[in-house]
Amino acid sequence: MARKLFGTDGVRGVAGVEVSAELALALARAATAQLPAERPRVLILRDTRESGEMLEAAVAAGVAAAGGDALLGGVLPTPAAPLLLHRYSLDLAVVLSASHNPYQDNGIKFFGGDGYKLSDEAELAIEAALERGPASTPAPVGRVRELHGAGEDYLRELHARFAELDLSGLDVLLDCANGATYKLAPEIFSRLGASVTVHAAGPDGRNINDGCGSTHVAELGRMMSEGGHAIGFAFDGDGDRVLAVDSRGTVVDGDELLALAAGHLRRSGRLPGDGVAVTVMTNFGFHQAMQREGIEVAVTAVGDRYVLEALRERGWALGGEQSGHLIEMGFNRTGDGIAGALLTLEALGGASLAERHAMEKLPQRLVNVRVRDRGAIAGAERVHDAVGEAESELEGRGRVLIRASGTEPLVRVMVEAPTEDEADALCARLVAVVESELGAD
Image (cartoon, rainbow, N blue to C red; front, side):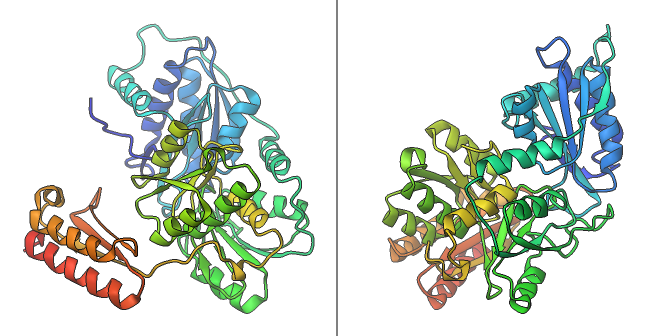
């Protein structure tokens, strides 16, 4: 059975259209009905979008209609879900968020009782149950109630993990994207002793990710370069990503943050298997740095779920993406932006982020080529020959990546090389071949 609703991170689309109250109710009822517990307990979290309350009510109704108890945690970051599932021994969590998307969108994603996002098989089972419709004999109706203190419980978990991190006197600037971290991120930094300035922490239901957060980090860079802060962090709308900005206003992406964390954890004996998992988009400079550190690197497809799969398969603890997903399995089972920011400060050990030396990023060129059929890349022999030639020229010094977009008629051509000129030249050469062989008319 092919997927119809679920993407790589749950169900996502325009709220009230693709992600309607009717769909939310039906999904929640179907997912709850799959649970083995006689009276399942299901946690519901959301971000700050104006559609969140509508979908929260619909999901709660679906849980209760299937005989489960719905526990409303309110506005909390996505990474709070696995921690609260474990803390309260709950059966399922539903998070309502479209992450870094604009406010018009929303999404529904599920975490199982083990704290992990549901497997492909579990999502397919929910879709199958959705097609069958509700049971002819309805279950006894469950209850809906608030889960008081959920935010404080998440803060308590963060504080326990970073109890030895003393941020006294550190001047920190936080961009909360007008999203789910807007209360809790400033609070935990303050509790650990930092002097906190907050940007984009006034959600109104429509300003989430609007010119702010980890996907619009330029404003934070400007504020850092003008404000004299020691370090800045930008979260996304649901709080599972983080990017940093140093005191000079330079953006530090997930590759560099992960390199800092990997070296720190290995030196302190807290990197199981001496390995780290990343995606194909990770800069070649990261691989060079890990080789120097004696750290093995596993490479996955783009998407934090694939990074997580690699970590579970190998028994490793650390992985992430260039976009800012940082996963430390010893603490949480998904990307956690706030924990990632605190891990960065722990890794720095009081040093300035501006003086970091974890890795040297290679110049990167990325061009999207519009094509007639993105699937035709698989059989384009001239393109693959050209890639082979470029890889031979760069052997040990850089890399080439050509892949089809998952959603658009595009082929993405990426080259990383030791110099800007070499990256430009090789990328232009490959783009010309792709356009010649596959380009749209």
